[in-house]
Length: 338
Ligand code: SF4
Ligand code: MG
Image (cartoon, rainbow, N blue to C red; front, side, top):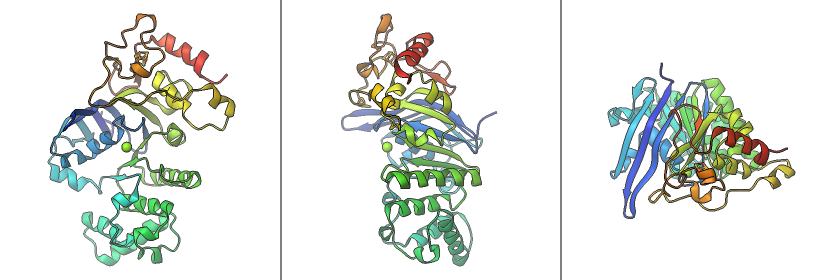
């Protein structure tokens, strides 16, 4: 049977003056309730666009073409009526962004915005909604929630604003929560607190959670599965522990290398990935990672001409032409800490 969220061959392409951007080009994964998926990649890998595609927000762009299927609780959001999908947003699924100021209105109090988010989907009186808003502010750890509800977003610190946005995103008990770089703008201590908070709330509400990040370290503690994106495609997908203990894709090795480690010796042994992510308009031929990959064309594998695919889309796997034995041996001998 279908998982709670079942994404099949999702494609999000949009036309720009410079050409067709294939921001997401064939993404498949499944996610159960109560589980967390980390989608990881550098900026420009298509990971944010993928989340907008799942939420149906791509429709706001007229030049966007979307393909594939996004089944949420047995219903395909891609072919569903846009008005229906709009109602599901905020109610059944909601999103936390990196910058709460993009999601919150500067001229309304924090409390008023949470009340509004609640009343859009629930026929309740203002006082009931207000009580609910204050309860949520309390739940996300905002001190004196009664008083703080009357403050404007700019009167909150960055970390408190992020908590308020989480309160707003969770006020309707969404079954799917997508957090896009939820902690990137915050200092390390607050970052850890926000991640703990997301985990606690997830346990309490049993939601499916997708965390989108450029930093593998952010999802190390939180994710059950990890999906690595590069050039609009999934290059490696699997259970989180495998991705940290025995990752097989050279790009994932690079991401691990740029992960902050406590152990100095480890960091020195791993090199961050040289070069820059490709343009999603003009992807390199074959494996789009080949210009940056130290293993490209090794032993005659066709990295420059043939696009490597996952063996089974949506199942754990690696999109790389290196034979599996070579990938495993290379990681074990050259990449992994001794
Ligand atoms: Fe590197 Fe080739 Fe594998 Fe791409 S397919 S990651 S270029 S070895
Ligand atoms: Mg992004």
